[in-house]
Length: 341
Length: 253
Image (cartoon, rainbow over all chains, first blue to last red):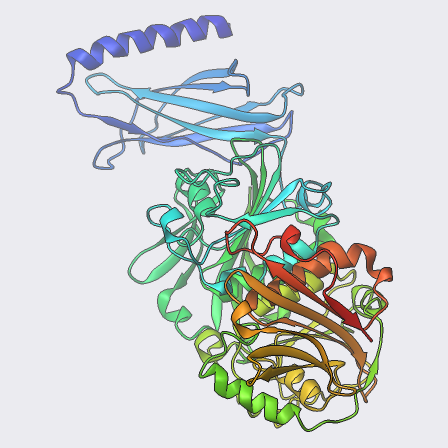
């Protein structure tokens, strides 16, 4: 059955190749694809969803959407055809087999419709499920030299990616706390160190290790890479009045107005865990300001770590409000505002 | 800033003030072995250990707090070094406050208002009110001294004023620093641990050293103070563990 569907997809792709050449005057479809989680365990249900729109963002209903999910070695695991709804949305749910191996899975989607140029996209998810709790074994309890703590450099501007600026030492404030939590001696270095980081992309050069990074995408090569490629569960965004933390599908999970941040008595921060394309277990923590970043480390050590088993989601967003006005982050001033996978 | 080099305002002026203050010798409190860090702090019950962070100033904090005379605002890299030890603690939470907290620290001179507590105070006397107090009062085993004539940074023994370690001030650069850690009991029964470098990198390096090298073998650290050096061997300006001297360049009780 899968073989037949694969054949059908190949045929469709070949036809598209022809059509693309012949129908260049047709309007362009735009298709997106997301997963309801960044990671799953074998046997769990996976929901894929997205939207088919035109280039102006207007929904395109009744488009045909072909979906193919490949396992980590590139073999088709799931193939499905669906149609977009009247709002342009589509979804598809399937169960991972119990035999699903560890690694990165890729979901490919192609949308096509009569007298439209087709569009394709992809999304990735990993097996097994990774949560903050996973970090106990993969990071804090890891064997020696299995974890890389990567600091955002405050110098060496020539080695920062476009769009990434120099950090301040305040961005380092909580790294010591997280390093101190480790059972063993681990590695560390700067995000401008070519031995650790591919300076053309920001990707760590190593694989099957653990990574801890603190600081936002504006100052950290590695965080920039993970957010820019939508590999992290959440990413930073802003407009003229507000800072946002958003999911990969663009939905907002946390926000704070710029005016709220000006006096340094409030912040929001994220703690998120995920697996990257090289099989590294990644922990990203940062606030919009340095206080949120420090609060992330302090809260992880002081509140989360003692009951880590109960933190079964991949990402958490918190808010800090300086209730006593002393400017210092007190644990009682931190509240969780969102979580997810 | 963590140590002294990046103190806001005139470094020389601050050093001279501190030097004059520290020349008024007093009797040191009881030194204890650094190994007591394990029982006093790492294994402390929750809400017992007191981590005192140097106030980073209104620009960073959003609040303007008074400072004792000759104490400047700190850089946040000192907090990183403190974090290494906080992260090592087995029981949570522990108390973390600013040195500008009037509930814990007498803001006129930096004297602690608590007793019988384990206390962590990382940062040099130019930026940390509590460290400034202990050095000025000669309660810490060592105190920092800038010898203008010799052009040296010195760590001197509070007990007799003799030089425990010195180096030319020109030696301290972006790629070289000295780092010190010491333990003692003050007159109020507080078990105090102070650490700092001349520059902020030294302070950071000592945090890393405490976690990665000293901590796993803490029982061997029976002396009350240790001084190490950091030399940037790979030129990245980042203190790597293997760049910190294997053995202390000076130690004592």
